[in-house]
View 1: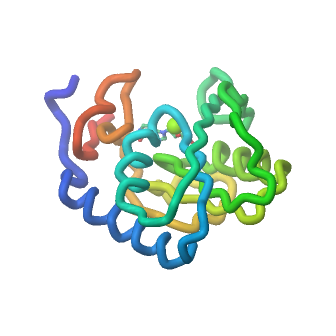
View 2 (view 1 turned 135 degrees about the vertical axis):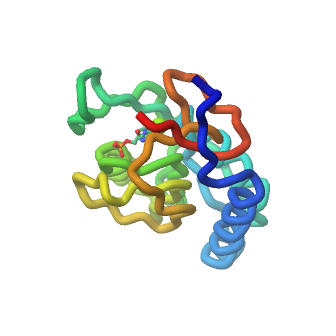
Length: 172
Ligand code: IMP
Ligand code: MG
């Protein structure tokens, strides 16, 4: 199934845009340490390339969440892997691969807010804006993408395709 992929953003475009985001974050955080909360599994790739381009010191946390089984995302999200350390009083940046309906990030934002961070921002590599069901304010967006099922660079189709160095799509 990996033979019919159309490239949406090639490796150089991804890396160039991620460098721009990293620069913007460095300017915004003024060298204050940031606690990056990377959302497994998809955001691993984006997170590594982003934080290695940032000059801001970071602490890294990972979380994993899942939507309950079913057809469309219902907004019922479950924490599968929680934070290891307290984020109370910290400047926290959620790093996620994509925002689609918005249910996942709405949940995560509300959940992390209950831990009393000093600030809480969100970075997404891709935004399928036309699919949004619930509004979520996003602070850093890599690309606003068309309503296509994307794979590569963290995005999977049944766990396959994450390690492609570019983002592509398959016509469904
Ligand atoms: P949301 O709760 O609908 O915003 O869901 C976001 C999640 O859906 C992401 O974390 C991805 O795991 C998944 N997702 C949405 N669109 C795609 C896609 O095009 N390719 C791969 N995964 C996707
Ligand atoms: Mg995901």
